[in-house]
Image (tube, rainbow, N blue to C red; front, side):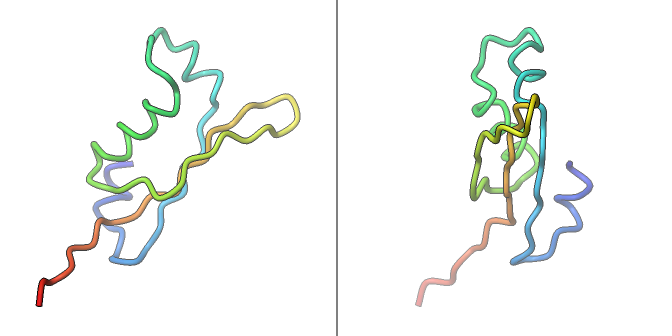
Length: 74
């Protein structure tokens, strides 16, 4: 994810799909949504959207992340 974040251009998006249940069972006491937000921010990106998705028997977590844009103050 860090390499993808490194080469992402301004305005680009990175879509991350992770198994919600695997995150929940990974031994962490943290909420899977908080874990995903941490992963994204630790890569220097901003989490634009984060949604749990039921895909048949799988419970997925889909994150859309992007480069934080710095706006010039006029």
